[in-house]
Length: 164
Image (cartoon, rainbow, N blue to C red; front, side, top):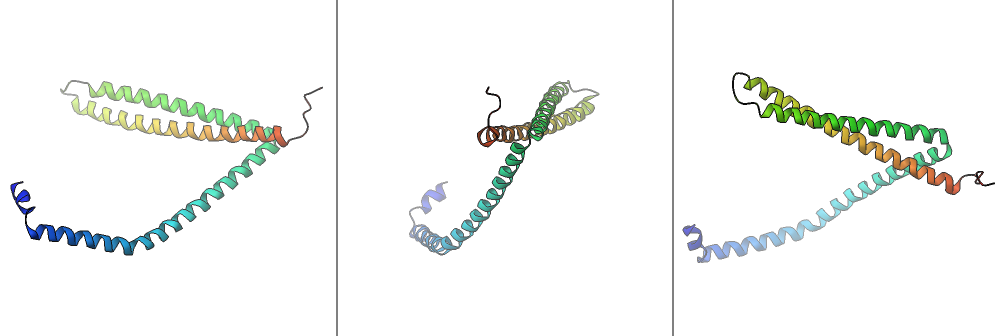
């Protein structure tokens, strides 16, 4: 630390700091334009991909709005998917509880088996939780599509036959 403080007062240190600063400014000035153009290409590709996803979603919403039976089947499948996700998350919690139990076993003759079961329970708990949360997220997006299709049906669908 004393060497560093002593080197702060030397002309060599200050000259090297100034030269490195100038070099960084020059390099950044020359690299700014290529980096900007590369990032704009990446952004354009991402924008096109998002546009395609939106078009597919609108097509699916239109198909669901055109067929009430398909809407009901999709809604039921989304509810089953959400229930499966909930069960998987609960299984993950149970595995985490097992991991906690096996992790608190006092060391002794069965400590290697306890550590093995601890690691297996921890891995299965994490896997079940991730799968469950993924299923719940997919169910939410399916239900969102069904909700949008239902709104579309009532907004642009046939005249309301329930009023008499």
